[in-house]
Image (cartoon, rainbow, N blue to C red):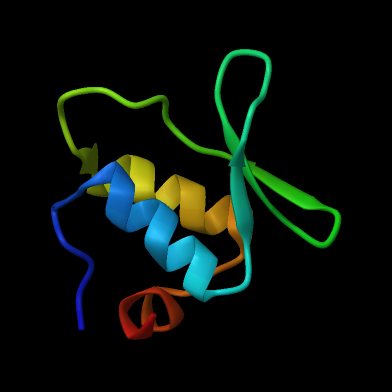
Length: 72
């Protein structure tokens, strides 16, 4: 299954939690999700959705494959 072109922030957080991450935790400028000792910055809440290019970058930093993400 392919990644959607846009993802709501709430869905991003929900899927991260299903994959064992905690958060969002407060950061200096942006909140972040944590799993063990690995932190990944996520966007601040805003009106729009997260574009696929930003989602891919977040997943790359979190070392989450597209298949793992779509199955969560």
